[in-house]
Length: 501
Image (cartoon, rainbow, N blue to C red; front, side):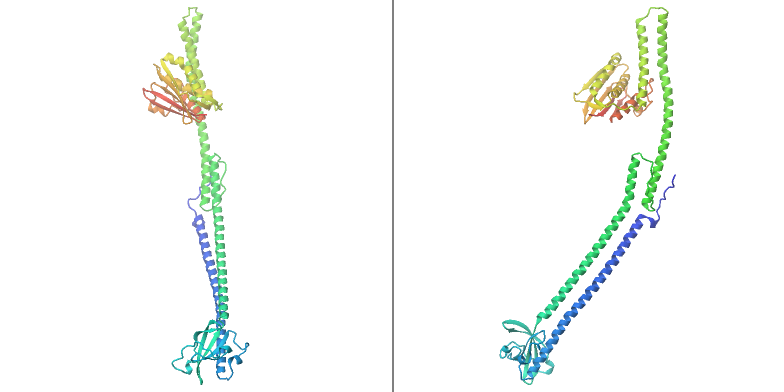
């Protein structure tokens, strides 16, 4: 016998602990990867943001430098006798400056890069309340109309010997706007790319988690499936195998326990076989004694009857017909009794196969009643057969079913030695054919009701109690059932049910 599996599994070797450890490790790994990925994404985003910020700042710085250069050109024109359109060529014009205009404090254009604007009136800011050098080069935003279009300007008050003048600089905003748009597009693309990285990494982690879950599930369910298959084999009666699962967790403990259970069942089965053999030997011994005892009595009667007949004929006495009839009847009865005992023994002991064919239970019941009618008339028993006329066919062995009905009917007649009434009824009910045999005899005591179908149990002085045992065995072989109801001094009913064909 193998050793019994331990009732406890080491904590670190248990499946739950290893599963918890694995899931915790995976959670920690996922957290670390997410943190690292997030840090890397933030660094990439910050670097790109700094890069684009520098780009925008550079654009603004270039614009401010061009603005300062434009202001310087305007101041030079105030100190010179030349006009700006004469001093500044296209190559000299700063890249982000579109036009330069010099106007008086009243808005009259005195100079500019646009010759057609000289002498015209434009909108200029209000003059500072105090004139002073400290107020120079403080730009003020404004708007003017150039060539039918309203444009934004930056106005700078400059005080010279000629009085207060406004230097109006028209900037080209497209360059700065383009730089800002480009920077924004680059940042948007970078954010989208980082989002895709995050989604890809998250999908990869989820795929890894799914693969690990499938692997764990397979590793856990495979031995359980093996145990389920082993349980099916045990249920079918196969005990000559062992479950080959060698693990140190709960599943391994279950497999070891299952193997121990198989060993125990195998030992129990062997013990039951030995017990059955012993019981069979004891039963054969009891049966031999019963058969010897039961056969001895009728043989003695037959022997005495035959001797008496022989003596009568040898002495030459005149034969008495009535006495001879009684002796012959006695011999026949005892021979019938021996024949019944032999039939009961054969029917109970032999595993004869059923010869199944379509059988009409009404016909079997009528044949049985016909055979027993003479005995019933002799005892003063009235027989009634009730038939509802519905088909009462079953798939069965006619001879063995007729033996069942005969055993039940004979028991009914034996329960009414001083007359009575026997009612035989056959009808079809819920897909089954039901045969009921009811007598008005002495009934069966409650303490005997649970034993009447047991072998060798009998309430009569003759016989050895195999008739009803044989009957139940035949009925069960036909997948049917037999039931008995009885009341002392009121009679007994046997109900036999068989599947309808």
